[in-house]
Image 1 (cartoon, rainbow, N blue to C red):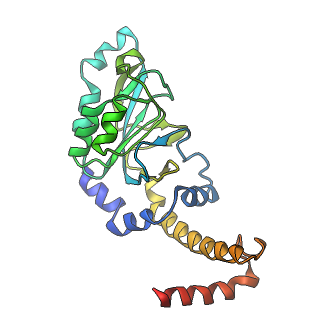
Image 2: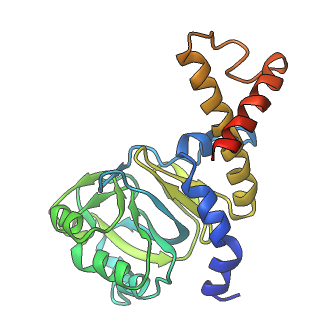
Image 3: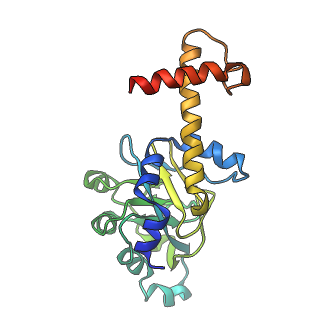
Length: 242
């Protein structure tokens, strides 16, 4: 299956629309309910204000640099990885949570955007941070550091399973990011998680209204049987108003 076909089959326009309407917090809750406890990428911050990111993971793995890794560097894995990005993909970098050297700079970040990539995620440092922000590239990153890649890293492989921010990321996973951070959804669960997260957020909107009216959280968060009829009446009036 080609990358284009993979993207269309995993992340349809309808699914992307659903995911754009839910928070990473709701997605995390639904994943945890299904036993996926470590899908949020810890310690990473968004570069752009009110940032949203939805796409398919395109992974790259960095190792600590050492002289005899030159055989990989001569292949220029980083450049190959950038040039192979397909529309709708997100470049996800395993930099071992290392903050002391850049993992990508403005030129490669812009190239990712120009190829149709949805953005970059690195659990290492971003180089040329102010320039990348001006370019409008969506990024989640651990730190900023002006040092070049070779100070700490060697890019050795791409499109393999990696760790990023403490989360396992497989090529083809669905990534969702918002102002809180970024989360990984196994591709086979993406539709189920999106539907469940949407339902959860509608129930929480109802609970917020009730709490704002002075009601206790008990029975409303989470929604319990005695308030289900009230919730459905609220939902009908909400739908009619739309």
